[in-house]
Each structure stands twice: as C-alpha cells, then as structure tokens.
Image 1 (cartoon, rainbow, N blue to C red):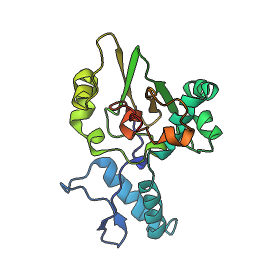
Image 2 (image 1 turned 180 degrees about the vertical axis):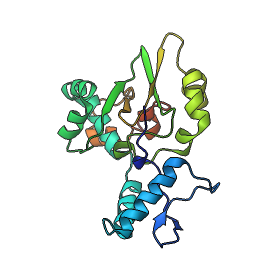
Image 3 (image 1 turned 90 degrees about the vertical axis):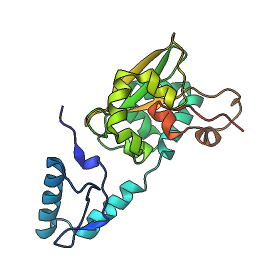
Length: 218
C-alpha cells in the first residue's frame, strides 16, 4: 500500500536555488518521493499558488505538535468507561468528543491489558499519529526498529525496559498512510482519586507507541 509522504519530516534549514526552504538529508541523497515533493512545492511557489512563508508556517505548526493531545485522550479513557468504549470502536469520533480535530486521519486505538500488549511500528517509513503524539522519535524511523519490532518484538521491548511475560500476547500494528494507531497503556496503580489533568501527566509518548509504560504517580 503506498504511503503518503506529505506528513513526514521536514527540515527547512537549507535553501533551494530559488530561495525557498526545503529539506536536505544529512547524506545529501534524496529519494524519488523527496525529489518529487521538492519539485511540486517549488513549482507551486513559483506559480503563486502558495508562498514560501506559508510553507514555513505550516512546517512550524507541525513541529509544534506534542504528545499532550494523545495523553488527554488516554486520561479520559482511564476515567470514563463510556468514552473508552467509543475510543476503541471509533477513535476519530472519540477525539472529536474531546474537541480534538484529527482531520481525515483514520485513527485506531488499541488497549494494553493483562492479556495483550500492543506495539506500533511503520515498516515502510515513519507513518505516525502526529496530530496526537507530535514528531516521531528518531528511533521510530530507524531501519533497525522498523524491521526488528516485527521479527522480535519481545526483545525490542526488553531493550526499552518493558518485560512482557510469556503468557501475554504481543501484537504488532503496522501503521500506514491510511491507518495510524495509538496505544492505551495500562493505568498505573495508586492513581485512584487523581483527576484527568493529573492522570494525563503520567502518560508518556513511548507508552502510546507501546514501547513504554505510563509513569508511576509521585
């Protein structure tokens, strides 16, 4: 299935010959899709469809995203059983209920339990729910993670400090341009009486990818 690369990393630290910002990889080699993206963007700027400032502003807006929105969703799911049910059935609708607009993103929520541990990967590139989790970490985009998370997920999780018992099923979910995942981590013990805002501070980015766990309170 083809991936949509318009949601992937952009670094506007370099400048093109025409003066417009563009991404330049450290090894100075570009894929076919990177070259096509640059060419299309340059052409649209030259034709006056968009401006370089508009491109830069959109990139800045994407870079400013953080895991806070995802953490808010998880915290509500921990507190509200009806919201949790909706989230597992229709994650976009649940996000909208919290006032979080994820656009056309086909989001799927999966829940860690005492029987199942979920972990998310994108085996082709770096598809990721950026509207909820912010920019993906470098390791998520690495070839090592993209291949090993599928072949030996328990070993990879152990390297992140997550030991999954043998009687717990590990499910690996492959994100694509059409589907992105968010993991609902297990709620930590000792959190009875904590309000939604306090619970959200316990939710980590890695726990919503599945390679970490929620923080313990205190």
